[in-house]
Image (cartoon, rainbow, N blue to C red; front, top):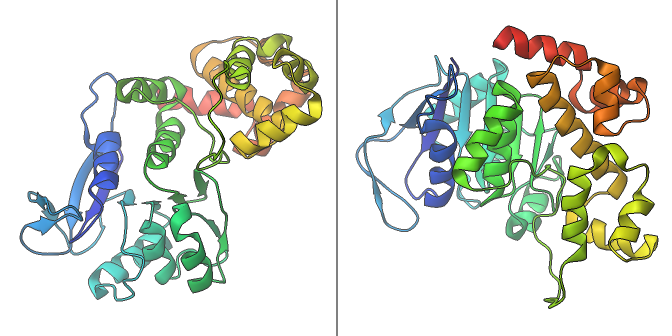
Length: 314
């Protein structure tokens, strides 16, 4: 059972704290070995959130010993002074390889401590310029929902915190468990980190053929051989389809198709005993070798090793 510490402090963002609590603190008896999570603080007394509500009952700590993961719901972007005890605790946790997640402006805290040097990171789009100027040695990635590499994840803010959290749950407990959590929160089970933070476009009174096409594609992955089929179904030229797709999803249609196929493959590996050859056909890859190539490229392990890992966890 993994133990999680969710950092609370004076003037924190109430929404991002609530996201972390909903993701990790809420009891889920239907999922075996669920997390044990605490809302912790390095301060004394009742805290005040950014909207003036008091926060009490947090667990006082002086470090993160005994915790496997730390969540930073937010951090004031202009606050350069960090309590020494908190700074030492986070630096030590990172050296120990503990998983650290930041939501929204929480990336500023990790960046000021040097934990993001040489890494890619993101934060809410409204802080993009300030972040890039303050931390030029960090590769800031604009207009993505989240980045999750090695032991550190940074989410763009607001609802994208849920996307990062669900990705972590998927890694720890599998796709079925992540889908259960998403269903309870009534949110999309999987939005990849590369999707755009927001899309500015005129309101179209006609049916959204792009959205309908993507829904159709997810249900028919086995029969789709190329992106031209999607463009035809959306009643667009290939050029127009590619442009609209990139504007909405912030990635190429072919990459999106591969992501969807890998997502379904993961669910089948966790829940069935079908062979890799059969699985490749079910999710629309041309050959088992193609499935293995993309699976290893995205997840760093083979389909069989993935299946073995979840069987051992079960």
